[in-house]
Image (cartoon, rainbow, N blue to C red; front, top):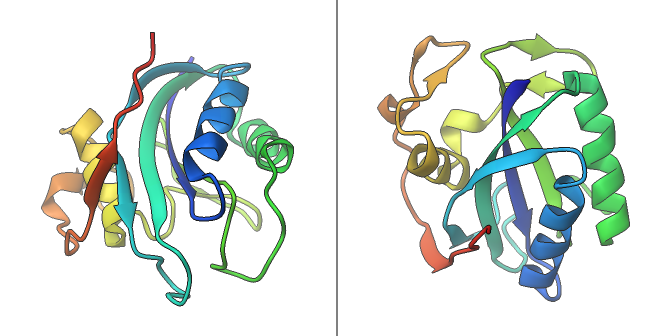
Length: 160
């Protein structure tokens, strides 16, 4: 089983509802081990839109990275994601941040996530659940990357 870290976010409609639906669907093929605090953050890239709720989860999977990506895209669609423009509003967005300590660079999949160390809504929730994680490209602890922290704790999701 491979350890994966996923970043999830929502900034459209009932954000918590979209997040909970996504977790429920992900549990059909992932063994979720930890979920960070849910944080509210400003949009990144295209900033003229509503604030996001973001968090990171740690899970185990038997899926290969490309298989995992396909399943994640299916979950996004099933939860209600509508295709818009790049970095636009999203009902749900699920990113593969890390897959084991692998570096994957294909046309459709880039792991670690290309902006992992630059986005506070990835770095701080990931460090919350895995304080000693190593960035697989730089081979340095993620805690050495300190993007400006603009996150506001929003809520916690308790997994029973």
